[in-house]
Each structure stands twice: as C-alpha cells, then as structure tokens.
Image 1 (tube, one colour):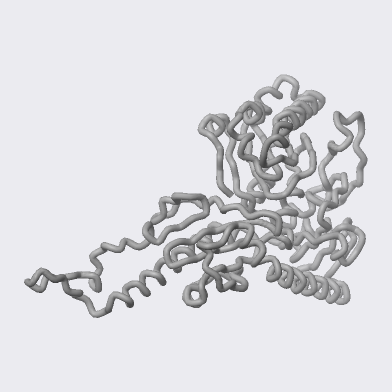
Image 2: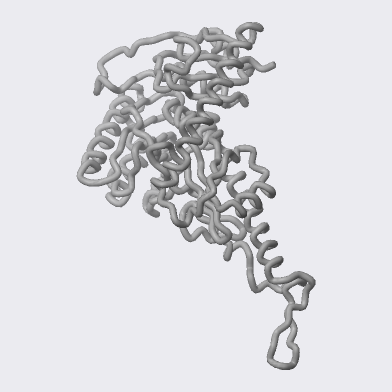
Length: 408
C-alpha cells in the first residue's frame, strides 16, 4: 500500500512495511526483548480520525507502564521513543487506513497500516504478538489484482471491503510514478537502436524501416517484453511474499499474452475488461464473485485434506500435540480460527504449553497482558516452512481453534 511516512519518522527509527508473510517472519525470527506490540483500529477520514492520536497515546502510556513494571523503568523512554515520534506527527494521522500495528524493539520500530480494523492491544513480552496480522496475511478473503493494459500495470491488494495500491520497491527500469504502478515507457525505450528499429533515409526526405519486422510486430514484441517485466515484478514483490490469489483485469488479447509469458503460480482467473475505465470499487465488484468461488473451493479442499490426515494419523486438533509437532517442524498446514486468542505460554524447547490468565490489574480491560498461544504456534509453523491458513469459525473442522496436517 502507498506509503506516507515522512523523513523525520524514518530518522526516528520507524520503518513502514507492506503486510506480507515475509515481513512478519522477520519480526519473529530474531526478537530482542523487551518486544513492544501496539495494535489498534484507525479511521480514514475526519471527524472520526480525530480520536486516533489519543487512542495511540494511551496505548503508548500502557506500554511504558508495563516496561516500568517489568524492570525497564530507566530504559522505557528510549524503548518507546519511536512510538512517541509517531504520536506527534500530524501528517501521518491524516493518512491512516483501517488498522495500525507497530512493533518496537531496541529503540526502533516496524509499522503496518492495514485494510482491516485491529483489536486494541498493548503488550510487552519476549516476542511480538503478531497473530492479528498473520490472520490478515493468511486469510482467505484477501486477494491481489493486476489491472493491465498495453501501457500500464497497476497492482492492488485488499479484501471485499477495500483495495489499496501495493507499495513496490524501485526496479531497474521503473521510476514508480505512483504506488503500485508500472509504466511501459519506463521499461521499453521506444527509441532504442535495436537492429529491428534501425531506420535509414531514402534520400527523398523519407525514413524507411531497416529491419526485418513491421511496425505492428515491433509493438507486439514490446508489449510482450513489458508484460514479462510486469510478471517478474509482481512475482518477486507481491506473490512470493503472500499466499493470496492474483486476479487479472485486462482486455482479452492482453490477458492471453500475459498468461502466455507469466510464471506466477498465484495467477487466478481473468476479467475481460479495460481496467483504465474502472474505479477500485468497480474492481472489487468484478472480483468478488470469483473470489467467493475460489474461497469455497479452497476451504473444501483443506477440510477434505485435514479429514484424510486425521484418518491416517497425520492430523490433529489438540493444541498440545500441535505445539509439539510445530517444534519438530512436522506441520505442513495449520488451520487457525479467525479472531481466536488464547492467552498462554509456549516452551520453545519442548513444545509444552501452559494456559494462563492475566495476573494483576490491567490498564484497560480489553488489553491482554500475556502472549497469545495460538499466535506463537502459528509463528513457529511459519518459521519452519509450514503453511498457515486462517478460516472463519464456522469453516473450522473442530472447536479448538487449531487444526494441523503433518508433513507426508
């Protein structure tokens, strides 16, 4: 999604990240305790967004109090400094989306603006509480859209509620005029002196084509080159970092060429429309029935696979057993109930779990003060190369909130 981070915030040690499994893996690969997790819903427009800064400030105060209570009284100003910098940046609070997540450690922070409201959480622990973001990154309701013409490619990510441009890293050819946009003019130099483009004078004021191909062949070849570069960028920067389906919106002749050159396994169905004439809302309306069908097919496939795994002794719905499987790297696919949070601790050496309730007085009743056990198990599965899929409660095959399929 488009970034609105300012230079002062970057100097304060804040890095905005695009939500992806790759970015989340970085967060829980090498935690440096104490790890500060701040999650909250946000509002896009005034007057509703006037409350966001106050909510954020209260959560930062909660983190500061927790740091003091856990022996970090003299270091809490340094640890919360990036959050305070964000609190006092008025420009940032004019460009929020639907949810905000900030993860801080050692005086630096990673920030995610997301397309779905997040629960209020302020947690200090030995690792981050990432499950709400894992749920978003692995949920079946998310998708990517490639809106493609012969001249432009725009990449969006979102849900049935909202689409936002994907934040792309600069490429060799693209200057990235707008977030999520690739332009043919940046990738194909139409004046390049390639052999088939060399032109010579006839001596009568005319310029003749000096190659073996005609003008239309040149245009077709350039279109294919442009599509190959678009496919490479989308595959490397979008599809490899998440597990969402990619829907293609393009005229029929362009869709055929792109599918011919594409190497992206996430590429799903095409919608034969000219995307230059469509708004983001119209794109969502076109994709929604295709996404619903893809969701039903995927859920049915997962439930059948889980039932077969249980039948052959390779599946489990017992959190204690799943925790031990996760530690051993035996989980191929983990199904997680959306929104489920179970306070508890997880022994990373043995896989033993301990269910807990929060002890002591909470600054706000809605703020958990111990890590989420389900989230910790999901993190371990992702770290060891397993797949995590978040499903609605009614789609889950059991009541425990977890269902695991072991590696074959």
